[in-house]
Image (cartoon, rainbow, N blue to C red; front, top):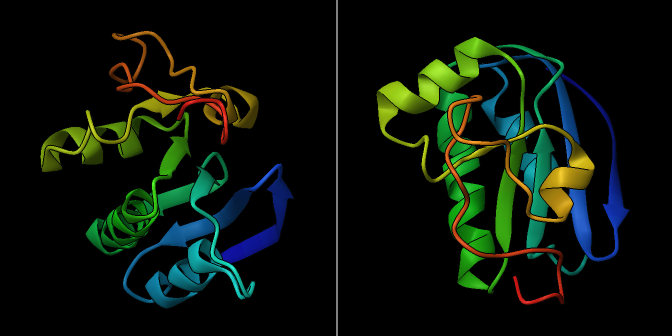
Length: 132
């Protein structure tokens, strides 16, 4: 797994892993999601559009990051367009916890893709500091 430089967007960490998310790259994904900032981000957008493969190891790291974010009143949202990621989420029962967002702007603003277009509606939330 390679990564593009993570960015911060008004209190939200945006990570963009590239390549495969599997057992061999799970630790690198964990580090990207967590970051090395002194203050951990409560809100994280994981842009998975450049991910070519993801298994349960990558999904577990996303779940761990989601739990950490929610524990401090935040969220983790996924941007993806690969059918294989959608299938993985459906088969593992996490499709509702991780609705699909079409882009980083949509994720940051809490606008998931329409149901039936690769994801379920997200429950509540919006931008950091905007009630979500």
